[in-house]
Image (tube, rainbow, N blue to C red; front, side):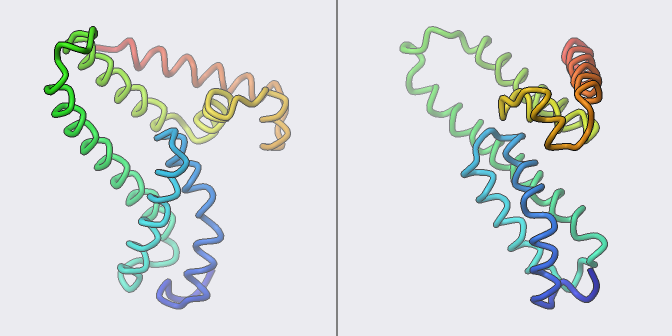
Length: 167
């Protein structure tokens, strides 16, 4: 891709190159396709607004950084909203505040660990766990052997267990 991102043709090319991968990245983090599509669009709007400051070579990095930050901001906002909602229904919820806090912290840590996995491992892990694909289907989609998928999944699970059990 050549040219400036401010040129419509170059911007379209960047969109076509990265939109699906970026949407999947957000979807795998959030588990919410609508949220992923919204954040995808918001990320590209920010790229367009900053087009004169972002080179074509840095576009992918810019988009993924912006999308990740937007996602984390939404998570923070949801935590604040949930905190205030739960204050109104303390007697109704049988889960203790301590349990809710630990559950939230665990989920947050799990998302961070998954996000930190090498791309191949993360991709296989999420395709298996989120998309519910069999190893054979994943291997066909990624054009690698089933053994390679098994190895990536094993490494991903080992890393996740190790990182979650730290602390």
